[in-house]
Image 1: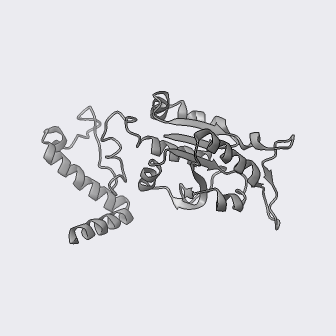
Image 2: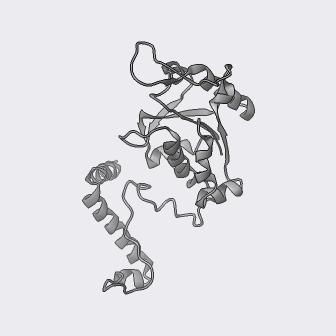
Length: 237
């Protein structure tokens, strides 16, 4: 899988490709990454990528031509038009299911906006999907893009040490994850549930599922209700 990121701050992505699981996966060539600065596709000596919006208003907008030329360059390099995602507060929520959908694309291009946004004509004609990481505003699309990339990279076969690690994460089955414990058995007067120490795998799996249901009901009742509705519908078929 290949990620191409259009950004005015390519150096920010060193945090992703030089740290942790995503670094190891990059070094093992489990995914490819390239950052593209749209300033390289401008025609004036100031390398201008933004301008004032028509109709007035505060702030500046990223211009259509540099962004479009950048996507054209990516298309030429990879041999086909990539699936283009614009990180935007107006996009669809980023969920675990959405990460799985994005992981199916061989070439994924992420557009990181800055200023007050980007020219609407680019969104209408080039962007395939807008995605939002939450109902809040940050200074640019770089951090949301890294969150999206990290989530997708974890799903690439061979990235995680255990094949079931991603499958057991919160949200993977619509529920929050169950509690986990490690050594020592006793710490500050607190112990580990007996069922986890007995080695009975069927009982452990049952306990974990019950805990996932309980934790989701307590912390995310919206997810719990959706989970019950989905599984009730499956049983009725």
